[in-house]
Image (tube, rainbow, N blue to C red; front, side):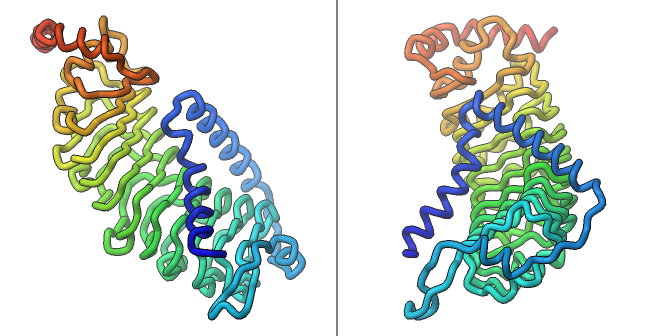
Length: 342
């Protein structure tokens, strides 16, 4: 496999995980699907689990993608699919050192230590297993690992998470309560972090200056904190949390283009003042299913504060809307002041 082919494989898979984020209808369908998967995984994991070790026969059935290795004179299979085999033990994996793409999702795995020998691994999917902690796992030793998905496990914290080449991490549907353990020195290349469906109450602790996309939907977030560190963030997804304000959006977030606040508790028109800090870069804003979205002339009011928006909720901003919002800017400012006095 050429370097170009490997890059297309890696990024094609990761984009498949992210593509639903910008289209609301498909996003809702994706969220329902994830909930169903989580319920199924939880029900299965509560059953009595019998020991099941990886066998040579399973390996032979799952191996594919023959590629050159080493100096290019020899070949080996580099892709392995072991999903849904009820596996608890992956010891045999340590003998297959040329693997680059590994899917062990929907098993009963709690220990990833056999992966230590897989020094060429680029892509790892371990969704729907029994992993409780990342501390002591070999992820930080996998020098070439770029894409990691451990959704629907039982991870409660991020201590031990690392990898010098990691670009995308998916931890949907775990039990993470606080964002601790994200050390910039261990994740210098991370650009996408997916923490949807956890138990977070705050955004504090994400010190990842190179991060571009942050997905935090379906948590219990009440406070936006520590976001001033995310200078290169372009996408911030906070749907279905418990935010009442937009306080915490920082002027240092000078690359922010997409902000999804759908399904929160923002009610005051003054909340939009917090977006003045990112008004020059913000192109898409989603505020549907907030009390604020029920006010009269909602769209025009928002556009009077953020005249460069290209999309508000599901709809593109028209030239006519933009002009009317500009003409009524003074009127909306007065209404805003009256609201504050009340």
